[in-house]
Every structure is written in structure tokens, then in C-alpha cells.
Image (cartoon, rainbow over all chains, first blue to last red):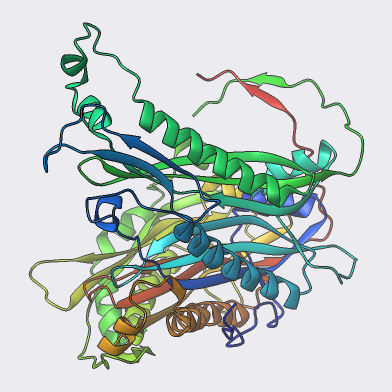
Length: 294
Length: 265
């Protein structure tokens, strides 16, 4: 990781704390015996090149050849038509360089946030928020991670701070259910789709006519396969980060970006909280049915 | 406050006179009104302050990341003027504080390089007659909603003021050689990272300094906003905002949250 100085003004040294928590989450934080010590943040600006389309990479003649262990599926034209207007091949493949860029940007920003929290003497960082934002010029993105560093009242810290996306009552309930947060888990996968001739016709809505079928609803095999592969790659990435612990409060967002006709990227992003059981489950009290007056 | 801003404040006289007679206005929702009454405060009136500010000429170097101090000063002073005028209205009503403060910036077609900064909120007064003015002898301000105001007081903390720090920063353009050198690569741009760190740190430090002046023990609800306004993508304002709080009581018992099932929807 490149060294970036964050010593301009080490937070938490002025005696007062700052926190990104809402007042409700702040109250819940105090109730759990956690003292906010400061807003910890980490940033990393990366140059991120999207890469060429499979057609551009193969000069239109042949599919892209990815690294040996990367996911790839090739689709060949069953019609035997040789034409510049008819796609002779299609391909799904893993864009490993995008995943690497994302991991590098995210982990650098995360490490910087942890360094700040450690300097504040924090036991953990709660209410973590992260995002990736385009910056100034084309192809430059900034990875941002922020969270409120907290200390357990009356205890000193000598271990690396734990982190969690949770705050407030959701974090309190997790503790109450017997789970302690270890760290946030974030993963991304990227699969590029260069539609084959059949996929292209089906996506354009001319598939039924082409195959002489009366029913308009046809499964688009190449896209289904690309989505399944993207999710599987994501699952493998998450599993590698869990080391046998549990993942709670998972949020999965599936992004799809179309670069051109029949050229798209499928990019699922997962965020979750790695937790470990530290005590037996205490049964909750029976929930009280309520109607809000808002 | 200057004579000029006093003059501006006098133009609000008729509206404030009516409020002083007992009629109150507020942008509080019914629930917020209820909760503010529950913690012993009464709304006095909807108060506001505004300032139309012209920003001077600011030079910037194409290839250098740097703070644009003239723009920073302009953004800071304009907001400060709007806030001060709003606080003056609240003080004229005899308020202890202002809740639900919103700070907005508007641009108009008729004013090139000029912007209107507006601060609005609801002035409130403690019903027990004990002054809640802050360390500077002014009504406290906060962007907390009525619900958040209620919750904060339950934790033994009280708001002292809406604190902010701003920094307008120019992010360097990359030279042709640098761009060519990194073509086709995915890599960190440490100069950019460092510049953004510095800009945010400056904004946050200024916010924390304001909180220290108020004798605050903390700042809650910190937000880091970034806007390019009308300056182009390489000039960004980093604005850090939050409510400075002080601990007023150690003898606090927070109510145990109860598990509920919402019957709405």
C-alpha cells in the first residue's frame, strides 16, 4: 500500500469527540457502554481502467484468453454464417483486474481507517459507511470508508479495532443475541458479457421468430450463466474472508452496466458483518405490537 | 454583527413583533412539536437568516493541488452571516436555542459568482425559565430533528451549537506525461489521495475548533458534504457539519428499548 500521510490533524486529540452517528445510534452506543472517540476515515484514489470489450481485445476474430484460473465461457455461432453483421462467437469472462483494483482501493482505504481508529485508542469502529465515487477526471475513482471509532468504557485497547457496518439498535441486538463483531466483509466480482448471436437475438426480442417458437418467453442462457458465475465468484471471495466465522446482515447489490449493444458487465457487490458467537443466546422478550402515529 | 447586518435584521421587525405577542410559527412536524414540549421546551417562532455573497477572484494553478483560501473564506463568511442573522432573530424572541436548522445555498441566474446562503430553523425556549444559552451567551443551534433533540437530552447531553468547517480545494490536473505513463494501468494516485485527505482534514479540524470554542465535549451527527457548486469538477468544497454537545448530567438512566412489531403496512 502506498504511504499517505494522515497526520494533518489526528482526530480525537482535541479532547472532544466527533461521530457520524445519528442521535438515536449515539444513545444506543452509550447504552451499550461504548464511548465514541472520533470519526475515523480512510480514502484511496485509484486510476481504474475499464478495459476493452471482448470484440476489441480479439480484433473481432477470436474470443479473449483470460488467465488460467479465471472464469470464462465461450459461445459459438451454430448457424455457420460468416458475416461482419452476424456474431460468430460470444463470451462470458471474469474481469479479474477490476476485482483487483477494487480490492486494492478498498483495502488501502480500510487500512487507513483502521490506522486512525488505532491512533485514537479505539476498540472498534461502528456504523461504517463505504462508497466508491468517480472523481474529477474520467477513469479516476475514490474509495471512501468512514466510521465512528468507539472505546469500551473503562478499558484500554492494545488489539486491532473490530469493525461493523451496524450501529444503534441493530448492533445492540447482535450483542444481545450473543454475537460480537469482528470485521466488515466486502466483496465484488465482475463478469463481462459479449453476447453471442443467439443471445443478441433473444435480447432484442427476435429470438422467438428465429427459433420458430410460439412462446415469447425464453431463458437467455448466456446471461443466466454470467449472473450465476458472478454470484459464485462473489461467494468464493466472501468464503475466503470468513475463516469459518459467520456473516450477518448481508446486503447484496447487483449492478449491470451496458457498454454497447450486447456488451455488458455484471457486477455484484456484497457487504456484510463477520461475527463470532461469544455467549449463549438469551431469549428476547415477546415483541409488543405497535401502530405508529406518523 | 456589523451595522449593515443590523439594518437587514430590522427589516424583519413586523414578522418578529407578531411572534413576540405569542403567536408561534414552526416547521416542526406534529410529532416533533410533541417531543419538544415533552422535554420542557416551547417553540417561539420560525427564524431565518440569509446572505447574498459575491466571491472574489480566485487564481488556481492547473497542476497543483491547493486550498483556495479566498473561496473558503467566502463560503465560511457567508454561512456565518446567515447563521448569525438567524441567531439574532432567535435572540430577539428571547429564545434559548434553535432546532432543526437547515443551511442551504442557492444560485440565481442574475448573479454570476454570487450565491444566497440561507439558514432557517425553529426558535425554542425552556419552559422552566432557566437559561440554556451557550458558552458564548447565544441561543444554541442544532440541525437535530425534534426526535433527535428529545433522544439527545435523554442521554444527558445538551446541544451547544451547529458547528461547521469548510475548505475549498483545487485538485491538480494530471499532466500529459503522467497520463501517458499510467495509461491502461489500475493503480493508486497518491497525490490525489493526499490532497483529498488534506482538504477533509482541514474542514474537520475547523469544525472541531468551533466545537472547542463552545466548550463542547463532542460532536454528533457529523456529515461530510462535497460540492463542486459552479466551479468545475476539479474545485470541490468540503463541508463538515455537526451538532456540538456538552454533558449536562451524569445521572442518566437510559430507557431499555423494547422489541416491537410494527402493525403499519
